[in-house]
Length: 139
Image (cartoon, rainbow, N blue to C red; front, top):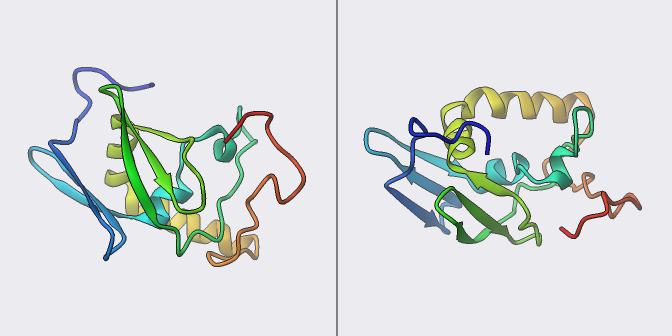
């Protein structure tokens, strides 16, 4: 967990809002509300990020994904379980905070990549299994 230390902001409360499809993350002095799709496309899992630079797989077709449940992982992270079966990404406290703080620029870059590659937020073209490949781990 790169970056987790005594300075890492840890949420005081986390609320799952199914109707609005958002995860609310509350800190001592600020709070954020992150869309399920955003959290899913920025999963830290090896399936999406790869095992090294240049192995990333752009996540597509996640507009309607639901965050079904949140599972704590020790005292340092959350496992988010999504309706598309994805549950292998561990969202550490530092990752969640960075996703929240940099939402606008990360989301804008994601939309730019989707458009540049002629992909869609509604059609899943990111599945390695659908493409006949796998990274060799169970996801």
